Image 1 (cartoon, rainbow, N blue to C red):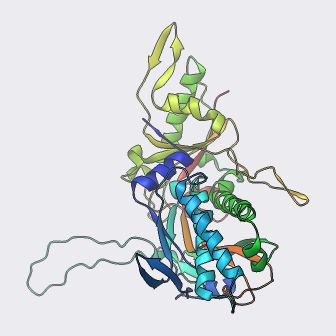
Image 2: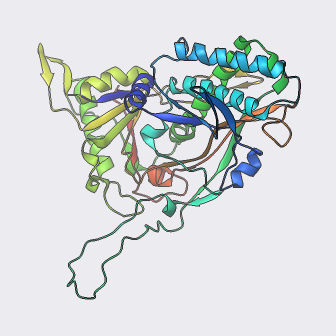
Image 3: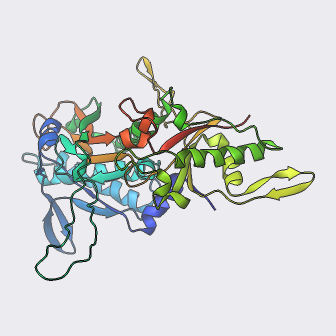
Length: 413
């Protein structure tokens, strides 16, 4: 059975794998952090058992399907309220370690809410995290090494060495992406918890919408797909469902005929091709596609027709961002998803698209230091870069014709 990927399945996968994150408070401004290879983090004082320990971040596990109404979130809110009280009642200057703990726990709340809102990045591209990444990172530094075993005499001859894959001079350029809330640390600390809840909820939604738009938005905004990556609706078949089945068969053949620009090999020669191909579609087309690619067709002459399941591994249904179409100032937010009646068939192979995360969603505040109690505005930001060319192939503005890891499909009407 083809797996349907959604917020619930992604979250369950993290729970099953014991997925953990680390909440850190980074020192310095976002401009400094974009260039820094050895990031500085604020020390956080925690009580573990009966002992006080100083750590560079708070590690936590994604351990429950529901966060908003969970006991863990209730306890986190109690901790935040306690930290607020300590900061409000401080007789001396603000304790840096307490403020760092406060913001680290705000981050945990934002990220745990984001976990429940389906970030599809890792289902489509290769997502890598490297705090030491430079503003410009060469792709060769991220790719697996290559090598070959040879027969040798064993008498003073050299063995063939594992080598770095040069990948020409392809680069990932990092950028800073940010949004803010016009308020001060002072107001945040003195605000009721429910105000903080609304801020963290908005932050998590904006973050997930932006990450999905980085990839899916890039795909669906392409208007001129080359013929080598375009699959028209099939007209062959006795019924609509048979035509859909034949359309996806044609899509697999079209995808198999594409070459990867680095290796110049047909995608069909990659070991993950059989059973590793995925579908990106509109939610209203999901149920029809799911049933048909699993081999279930409609009734013909009163008999339920079954045929061989197609070798797809996952289906992602994405109709747009959570905030798509919402008003923001004088602007209507545009976070498009897949159009109804269209879909994309793709192979997320190890040499496809890349997301390089240098800094996760981070709160910068104060004047030059994240730990200063300031009345200035503050911003959420992240630092990352994307590489689309190998995945999009000929559909990319800088891509090579006849290459790529994705084809656009038009469904029969």
